[in-house]
Image (cartoon, rainbow over all chains, first blue to last red; front, side, top):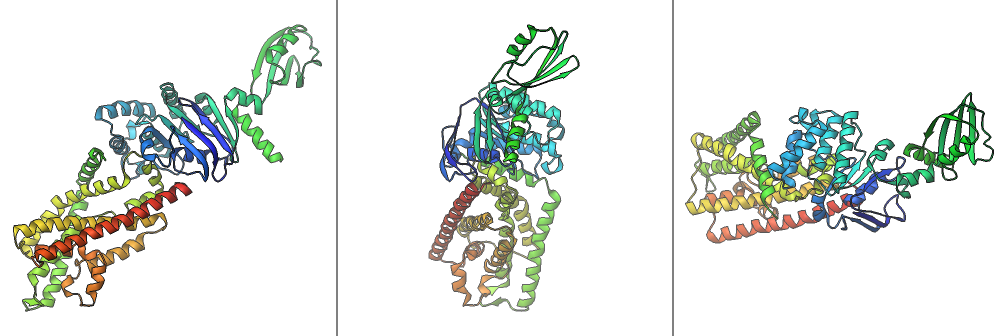
Amino acid sequence: MLSFEHVRKFIFSDFSLHIPRGAAVGLIGPSGAGKTTLLRLACGMLAPETGEVYTLQKNPVEKRSVLRPRIGCLLERMPVLEESVSVLDNLKNLQIVHRMSDKEFEAEYSVLADAFGIREFEHSTVQGISFGQRRRAELAAVLLHQPELLLLDEPTNGLDENAKQALQKVLKERVQQGMTLVFSSHNMKEVSDICNRIILLEQGKLLYYGEESTLLRKYAPMDSMRLKIAGNIPDMEDLPLEKYVVEGDELVLTYNSNHITASEILEELLKQTSVREVSIQKPDLADVIFEIKGGRNNK
Amino acid sequence: MKLTPYLAFAKKSFLNRSAYRFNHFMGILNTLVRIFIFWCIYRALYGERNEVDGITMAMVTTNFVLSIGMDALFSINDYYLPNRIGNGSIATELLLPISFKGRMLFENLGNTLFQLIFHFAPALVVCVVTVGVLPPVSFGCFLLFIISAVLGYGVLWNLSFLLQTFSFWLLNMWSLMTIKNVFLNVLSGSMIPLWFMPDWMAPVMNLLPFSSIYFTPVQIYLGQLSAKEIGTKFLVQMLWIGVLYLCGNVFWKKGKKKLVVQGG
């Protein structure tokens, strides 16, 4: 469990939020929003100038030694593997550090090595492997001791599609087992797939913290509905639509989902004509970021 | 502090050393060449004389063999911390559930044990056969020599750690470490036996920790110190360990604080 109370550090001001145990939280926002800084505060590698940060109910700077076995973190510019040592030896060093028995290590290593395809390069030194392979090994390193809290900063950078899928699977399993995850990414689909809560930051301000669906309604409420109609073009003057376009036998409607729902529109249209096909396009988290950036640029 | 993980790192460090055999043999050769060069120089300086100011050539040779041997034995990696600060991994290591200093010490102890068995011992045998080494004056002196050598290691490790903590503020540690090594070579007796230093140097040497590292154990081995003097030298060695440890800890804590305030 994490909580931030009135934190003030560099770019943050009057920032308060609480992340409950077992949550999978996606940290999103434009570059420079403060995502990495927030993760550094959470793991105790940064101290707030004023305010308080509690990680697993403890001050992460003062109680670092107590928290160390319970946290896993993979942050920018914080290498977790020794360059001149093989991947396997690096992980065996972590086995010693986390006081894992050989049996525990083998069981956990087997799962992670298979998931991330590490075995093919486990005897290579870290400096001799590719960036993607290094990232896979780093992920195994931070997951090895089954942390209660996992802090990941852009973990899919450099990963191929298979490795991304594997990471998603492992993270989802761990969250189901009770791990708390805070995960920053520019890939909104990943965040959407893995996380059940979203923190939206912009220039050190907490714009939103909560469920994704609520966020979308707040920042990107415009849905789009495409219909193939079989009869007459219906009269839509009374519907609160943003706009509508007629393209032959197709209708493209744009509407604010806070004002009218898709079913309400369909119900009204079916009174006037027959509809052969319907497809609804909803905005995603990328649209939210786009909206925020657009707003900032307009200012 | 549970010792199990630290002993595991010491063991790992010991085993890792055996992987680089060529490097190891070159290390022994380097030690022997250094001893041989100094032996040749002092042999030439002594000429036909048996002793100079009461110091025999055999004592000088023993001093070189023991102090250069201990230098090889106490092979402390002066860049252990600076390298980690340089590449940023110190931040990750501070988040691991193990003492960074403890790991650093035990990895070095594993290395030192390897050096003792596979570097110091064979080099000593070669030296005994070739240039000749005086035996310890008594078994008691030999035991006291070992205790003093362990304390000397403590002085050197803490001195190295103190200097390494400066890497939190300095970008390049090479010059600082080079200065330390020059002082170590000159003022510890491994290059010039301290018996031959001018009298005005004595107070300078007494104010610095270097003579406590190699020269004190050598003096005890050769039986040059009375029981009272040995007690005093032990106290001086322990005092240096304490002072350097405390200073190192102050800088270590300040460095960690700097890292946390400014980010890893």
